[in-house]
Image 1 (tube, rainbow, N blue to C red):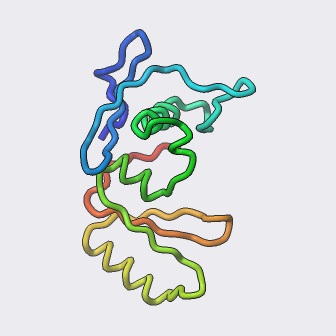
Image 2: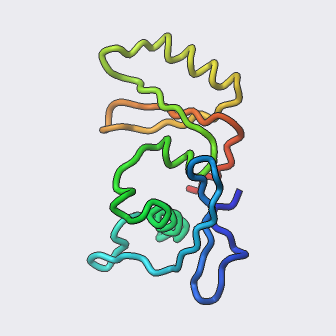
Image 3: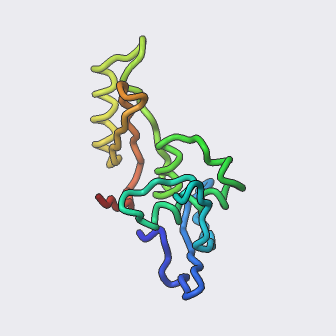
Length: 141
């Protein structure tokens, strides 16, 4: 899956970015002009100045109406936009956290073919996101 459609790229800096919103794939056409603050990108901070992060972020902002509309969100929402699959988040901390139950749920998700993602929340607690279906994401270091 390629989120940035090279076929829709022109010498004028136009890009087509494919995102899934409400179960429907949409090709969002954007340009390569980005908000700058103090000489740096105002929002996304990709390693090594990678452009794909800013392009996806700008397409998400256009899809939702503004950069302010995407100021906060969850990993689940982002993965659903990029993969087209429903996502479920499981918290791995809190007063009612049951490690055995969460482990059983995660094993069940994997057996159903879910892709499992994790992230740090606030530096201590972890959450796990399960995407249901084949995950079409590609990671780059």
